[in-house]
Image (cartoon, rainbow over all chains, first blue to last red; front, side, top):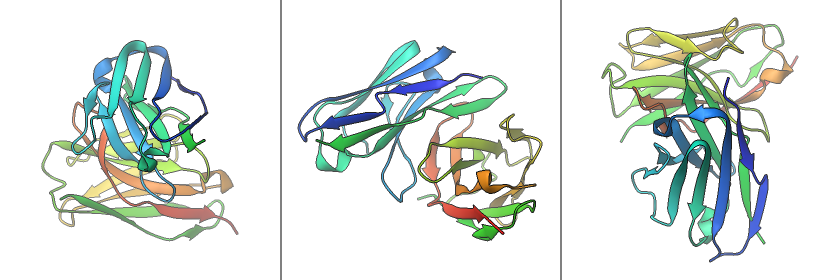
Length: 109
Length: 120
């Protein structure tokens, strides 16, 4: 089973700053099958990025995804107040099995 | 606009079977373009995929839960369901149903989630 490790666990930043979130896989992941989600308290996760770098419908262009192999990154170019939330990466592997990372919390500094 | 809504008991006793249903509106579960998944999240923790079903009835389960999980579909009602047997306190979680595109494997629509507590 592929394990996804997200870092840092918590990111303390101010509005307007750039956020860089990491998702590292224990084995190589097809870029086609790497997604990112945002979750706010009491809400279901919301799809942000699929295929490692494609933005989902309605997602602002300040969100971008990159990476390949075992290292993937979600970047928020300039944090807006509504971006403070928990972010999860997710991959699909053979078996089939889908797994999520442990999450990165982006909090207001 | 597709909507998914979970329903079922919020409290289940240990050793019993947890049963939830997801009702899909705004789209047909029989379209063939999607898998229909269950995902859970223990309080304060991360997300765990439980399994998914195709409209034909084909299922795929998380190996860690496979022995206790059954997912079924009722296309006439546009619903799919989850049964998790022999539950313990560790199964206490918010349970989400979600849709993922066949061959894409990401979740584009989610239900709001329902908290299921396992307690006597």
